[in-house]
Length: 608
Image (cartoon, rainbow, N blue to C red; front, side):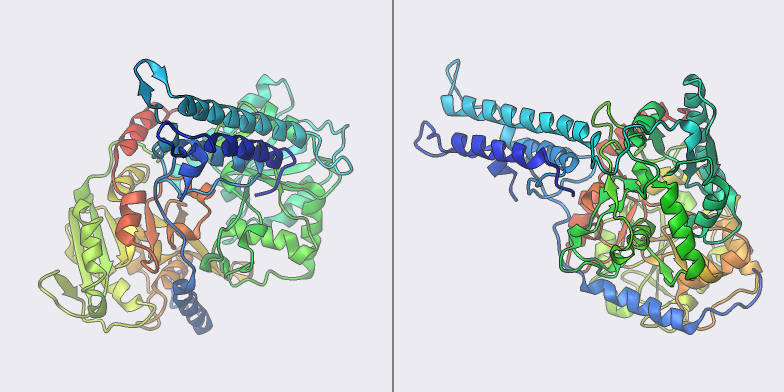
């Protein structure tokens, strides 16, 4: 978080108020706790390079080396509001355990004060007044933060910037799947409709999946030369957003006008790691909070001079990374270029929640709902396991999400009737599991009931919300070849492919499996990385993977809390150094809030 000039002063005033209040004796002679103190705690036999398999294995084993951070817990409502305000201010954050998404923390510090007859105890009344004044100060400084951002870095911001909509190229980070393409088209119509109401010339609105047949187009960087050649003469900004980003065009124009478009700008809502994590290759391990990267959901922007500079670099040196894991972090690293390029400039008006009317963007965070949830009987769950994990991992699966499944089987290298497990006749391997996965696909297609539309393959240490998955799948057509989950990439700068990372769960439509097995693409060995081989095969067949950020290859503690706060997550992966049962019931278990979201979502399906 970036320190703002208004934030620290506000928190100093809050600290003084809290200190004065907390020193007052209670009627019983004890010092009462304050809100702040209570906050607390193609067809063919293409071969995957074996170096990639080795690297993939190392990456997964490395996942057990990350540090620990609390994944759940309760805090006060006062602390929750203070934390939210501090996050926008960029000022020191009130320390508190992270409340589960969608669940308000109990207002421990704001409980009604004790009564004596009909009169309030004086210390309790002072406590209430102190909290009210403290949060009023924070709110005031939040407004000041926005005002100050309008006069940022006078040397770098032109007061005469008068760009109009023709100076902005909108790029929606869309996908070719029919559901996602439709959502992107709806957002495009919204942008153009707002532009028409402003009686301005219509801007260019591009859908990412339509710009190039390049497998790695979704990673953005390969498209920058196209943007530079096509738009650099008549445009000032390339503005990127997701299909569920909501944009207020007048506010966006006002925001971008504060930044001199002749300079190099990288703008966005800032995220940062709270501890070093495997998904970012343990970057900035000494101080992970120092490096900021954009939350794509809030939108992010590149000035044309920066696009031109990056294009020159791309032409002079090829992209070096073999794996694309977390695109937003990797793009920020590439732009920063070890200090040779600009860091991310946090923009308060790029929001994921509508905290105030000043927001130029917000994010539609409801779980997609496109009809009745898919029936339990229409989803087959296949759990990959082995004998050594029968006693510790399988009980957790059964204690958490397995009870929500109608059709589930456990595939192992050993038959155990008490579970029960199914021995596929494939020897267990320490990594890869390609042979086992393809055997599961064959069994599903040839031996399961033909009416089961979906197959979900998970690891025995995957935690998944079946109720949310059923709602998500209502948006997809099982008659189409759908391969869904969290998308990674391998060698995308040099003709590689995208794949669904296995730990977060891989979702297949029956049609996708039928086309895959009809081809000749198979594992080159039993211990080949199954998810990568599947990605290679589907790429060869011309079937794109479909990305959902609601699936997670890692644990909740491996992601910024602000990033997870606007999600309704479907899965997490790994039991290491966490309580998996607690993680499940904190983040994934069905709850009343999900039902409320679904009812609200029904009224929003036709929005835009």
